[in-house]
Length: 165
Image (tube, rainbow, N blue to C red):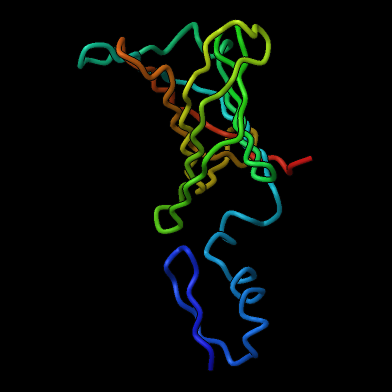
């Protein structure tokens, strides 16, 4: 028997030669729960909280058409369209298999109006799909953006999952 441990801190015992342990570890990684092929999460908010000076106000109308978030598992790209500009960057990704979540965070650069400031975005997706009224599988999400001295914005809603191109 050979014991191997990964960067995730889990151990596996296998009865195969040492040269096969890395392949085996990749095949049976806890990340497989999210894998099932590469995916793109297309997230649209339905509720927003604008937080300033220790208090948050709930917003339920007039922003849904102006905001969206996309996370691609193939290249770890996180993008966000926030009102008059869209932003994108490679994200740092944290997966919590026990909680069934993945969080993609990055300092996104403007894609349309290049003179705008970059924006930090954290997108947490809860990978426990439910079905919407049309029968399509959707995941819940929370996105936080606009971090700064003035406050931040927190969006919640649903993500449609699509196979990554």
